[in-house]
Length: 109
Length: 117
Image 1 (cartoon, rainbow over the protein chains, first blue to last red):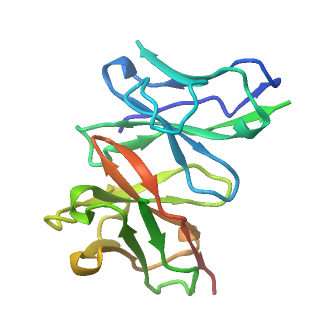
Image 2: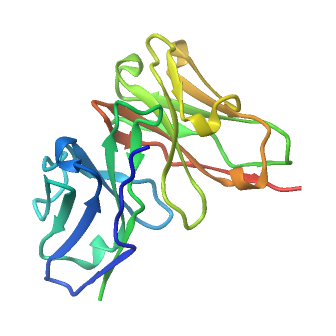
């Protein structure tokens, strides 16, 4: 089945830029979606279809996808951005079509 | 507003079954798939399966085939997930999630299922 690999952790100072990668075989040919999960809460969609934002999500959250790596970028990081982030793709060829990445803990220093 | 409200926490013994409900409001229940995703403590998200509330069609991850059943009652806009032959490794928070076009638009609040003798 399709595998998505994320770094376990990313640390960033307030006001700086955090970049979270999501690696997968030819992931650039798929649509990538990103979720934010704060402790004790359900995940929230922050980017869909590689780079689109749902209503209510700040413009500071952006995404890109090419080759074997997709990236979620958080600009001007705030303390409230500290959370776990998961990438996800739809693998239509699998019996397990919703594939989630391993997750990345973003720590704001 | 769009909401998915799940049933409360459950404690089950190994070998038992659990049935979690997920009541939808604020949108047309039959217009979006309902997925079930679980998360063990400190672990990542694990997709279990999906159901089309309009047709009742389902698709389950191979890992859960034979143990999971997803159903719905359209008259009360509620989806259900039943997991049988529970073991300690099934201890997790179970989420229902509204999906379409290959991604999840919104999640329930989660239901903690604890399997312990």
